[in-house]
Length: 112
Image 1: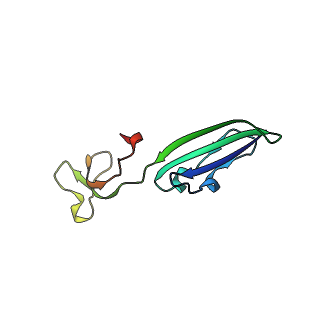
Image 2: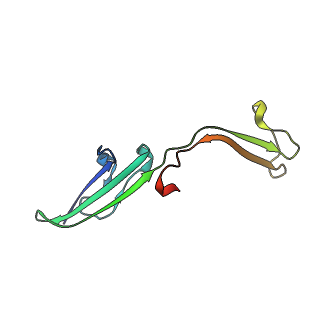
Image 3: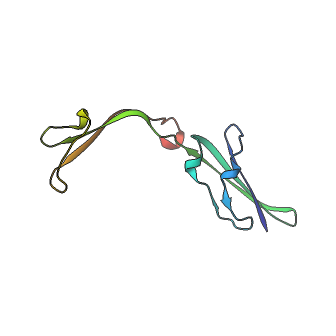
């Protein structure tokens, strides 16, 4: 049995070169970090002697990383990293991380 595969985005652009798989194995891996943000569909066709026996497909969405924004580190004593750095003692000082201003594309139906 052979398995042919293709990976395409919503605009039908081919990303099949990113599929890692053996031709006769149903297991396929896609290094998601190599794909841009967007919707993708992986299609697999199972055949023997040129006759299609079965097919399968899965559609998934790759979210893009958030952009912009800031991370502020502060200590219990009120000092923070807004000046560029912050020092403390490991296992003694308590640090708080706060974020603001991030832009993240949460328009995907799968992310709501």
